[in-house]
Amino acid sequence: MKTFNFYLDTKVTDWYRTDFEIEANSEEEAKQKAIEFVKEGNHGEIPWEQVDCTIEPMSVEENGGESTEELFTGSGDDVWNNKPNQHLNSIDLLLNKE
Image 1 (tube, one colour):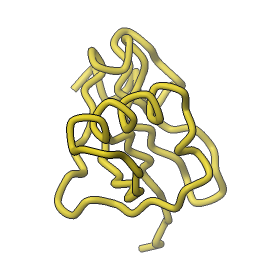
Image 2: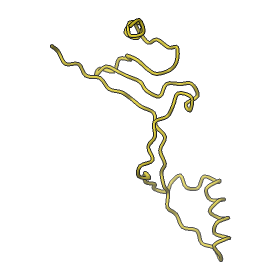
Image 3: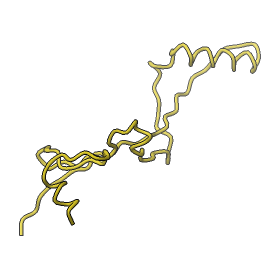
Image 4: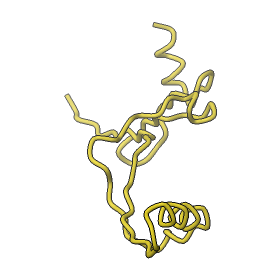
């Protein structure tokens, strides 16, 4: 019997944390400045880190009807994905007959 390699790509959601400091005269003023800082996109160049235990697989619905799981052969050929009503090749058709 032969061995064949495959890989599964899975789309997930995740949370990342960006630490930064704001100078202000009070905590209330600092909160407002922090909101402005984030809304203006000024945090893009600041390093961030992944928040532990926050990775969650996405559903097809959460991904706008697009696949969130895609199966490939070891050489990168598409085999299957979980997008509804989409058949990539004859393997998927055979699996649905059983």
